[in-house]
Amino acid sequence: MPIAATSRVLPAGSRRAFAGPVHRLLASIAACAASGSSACTGTPCQIDRLDDVPAAPAGEVRHGFALGQQASLAATADGVACLTCSGVYYFNPALSEQRHVALDLQGPGELAIGGDTTFVFDRDPGLADSASGGAPADSQLHALSATGRELWRDDFGSGPARRDLLAGPASVVIYDEEIASAFDPATGAARWIAEFDRGDAFAADATGGLFVATGDSRLGPATPEATLRRFDGGGAPTWTVTWTTTDAPPAAGGDVGFTVAALAAGGGLVVAGRFTTATLELGGLSLAALPLHGSVDGTRFVAAIDPGGAVRWAVAAGASDTDGRIDVRRIAALGDGAVICGDYAGGGQLGLPATDATGDAFVARVDPDGAITAHAIAGDGDQRCEGLAVAPDGSATVVVHSLRGPGGSVLRVGSQMFDDGPENAFYVLNLAP
Image (cartoon, rainbow, N blue to C red; front, side, top):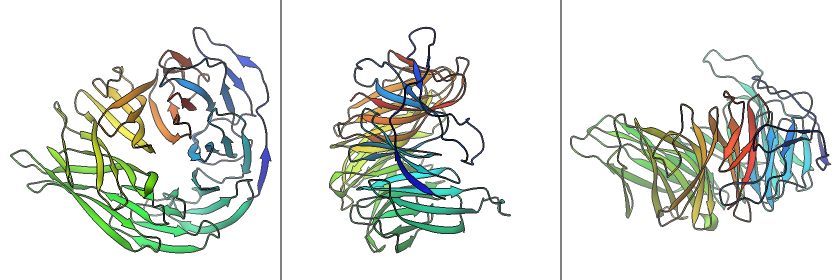
């Protein structure tokens, strides 16, 4: 699995025009066809730069490009990094002046940045399925320097195919719902292993530890509880915080859960999740459920927690019922607040325009005082947020998977339209703050 550090500037290529106010695309790198296969072999994936994007108001696209295959995204000290089947591409906030570190990945990978080090977790799902239905996989964890030099590589052999990656200033962690393994970011040496009953969302601790957020489900009359735990740099649990819920009579139980978490400045974290009970009690704060109609999938919330587990602020962020749904799929800290992205359907969500029969993606800024400023990313097919990174200038860069609809994979962001042709596409978009 050779690794070579290379640099390139996107060369000019033939332009493709589309009818109507659709931004043109500039084909830049040799194409690899989008495929349902999970294998990543052959020529590099195509990157089509969105061309001639004018000055954009808040929430609209300043810069972007489209990909034929899924990409993993992470924030760097001076921009963003994007992992495709052909390696890691580094961009400034304008998504230009890239350098490329070539990687011969065996399967879909995960990308994380810790300080000046890039970590890539490469899963190979090509082995035969196990009797239990899971796919055992050979997997490797790569560490790359700021110049693209391989620092170390750990080979894990056969193991669970569904493991994920995160990195903080002092550790890199691979994990699944029940176990997490931390490694020294400088050498790759194993540091600690922590086991837990179940984890819904995870974030790296600033000192080499780990935050784990776990939800609960009850049939009643008892109500569910949420648990947040912190493991220190040696893998030992240092604190556990429990959030309770209340239900209006007759008590029917309910659900509370987490979808995503991310490290915040100062060593705390931001989380997003959902609850179906009347209230969610977060220590000294209480969130009331939003009005729901008919079938209940609950109120969404976003919260910030300090390094000791105390809640700094919490905000209700939409609801899912018979009128529509909203799901928060990614979160990043931004100053005292947070940026979230996800997808929604129906009407009445965060001031977003109502959708038709398909679902649209959205990006929103959440302030501690409860103000939420949301922007829709729409299309003819379903749109789904697959990645989020906040750049140093405060702008959000997102990866949006645009499923083909009657009009192809066209995206609409405010007054802008983008099209990468008739097939499904992944768009990487930098939005004006």
